[in-house]
Length: 354
Ligand code: NAI
Ligand code: MG
Image 1 (tube, rainbow, N blue to C red):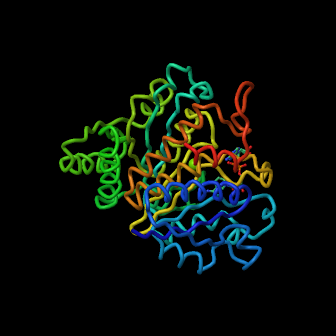
Image 2: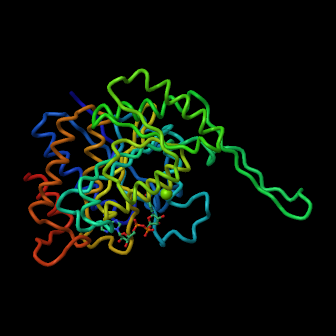
Image 3: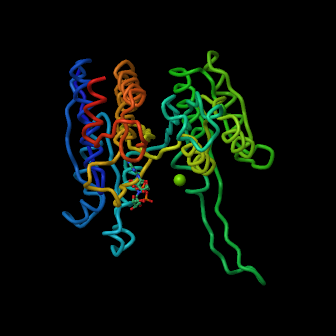
């Protein structure tokens, strides 16, 4: 087997965390004989400084030619003065568009060793292990918009929420496939009591569910889901929802995890998919070697799972991260008295040993 991975470190802590994740990938490759190779490309402010654009064509071409993209983070105050169309964040938006990244997967797993870091009571945080599958390139964010002054007395503006059956089928199929690899439960989140798009969503999801008899489907209104995430988050396995609801719910769910440094994500494309931690470039701690690499390491595990279908290798990385935490190793963001403080690179070694 031979797989090509494009690595885009980006800005800020991007280099430190992707270096750590590649170290873990190399160790995993030794054990599982995956035949991974790596091509490094620029994006974000770093690319702007070198080439005058946050997303060089050459980077896009390399991504398209690879089996998966491992992305660090982009952005930083250094580029605050840059004109809006050339800002570092345009790199990730451009990649979403160019690679057709139609789904965002955000797992939130509270490791037993990290239960105390959650803002929820320990008995509620314990055992949380869910994935939010968010539709990423449709819905109200991409519908027609109007900012109008034609209304007498008051100005008015609107954004059009709209979904087609094929768009809903594509995202819900991905959710069911994801559930098959997990505990076999899909919760579809909508607002079908008031929105026509939600009624189409619900109808389509029910049709897709017929192809997955081994997976249980239930529907939940978004307002109820927001409450359930705060009072009983451990009930969820896979949550699938549209772009707007998914944006909000995935941030709410991330908080349950208690630390921004450990959460991974996958953005699934029709051809190539992209994997990145949920946090940004953390300019405040860049270059100090103290960033938590676990979100990026777990993103690399997702790359093995979803792009290379190397489930055993993905699970091995996830188990090693859990074990590193259980053994008391902590980067600065999670450090407390009585634990073993390690740097970004040392944490990679600790994970590799496990
Ligand atoms: P941020 O996520 O970079 O940082 C928020 C806080 O969390 C900071 O105090 C930071 O030190 C800490 N933090 C983040 N990741 C950490 C890690 N791995 N280990 C330890 N501590 C960590 O969010 P912020 O400050 O709002 O944004 C900084 C820059 O990142 C901005 O330019 C923003 O636009 C960009 N950004 C980029 C994203 C991407 O590349 N996909 C996503 C979010 C923000
Ligand atoms: Mg958001």
